[in-house]
Image 1: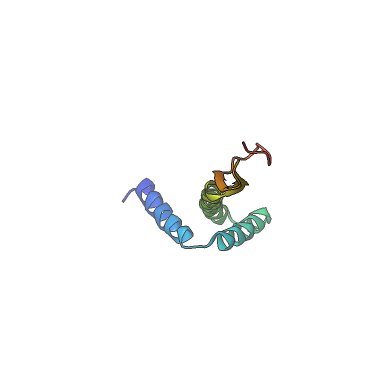
Image 2: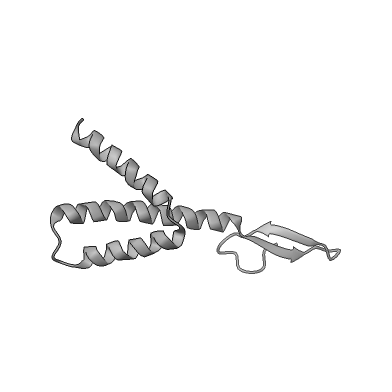
Length: 97
């Protein structure tokens, strides 16, 4: 197996491990990875592995946040007092009409 194929296979395993984490677990692990990367006494290979893990964790956390954002709904009162739901759109403030 070539180095590239081995790396792709390893990334696939790492991603599947990340996908098993809750958002909070992934965020905590990302913080640990960043703390370790900020120390100046780690070997290059470990730094590269941590960087790749951090990339996978950051991507996973972003996807989870994007999914949560899409699920947020705003409850509003209609003209006749009925409750209406609208999807929240960031940046539009509270007056969603």
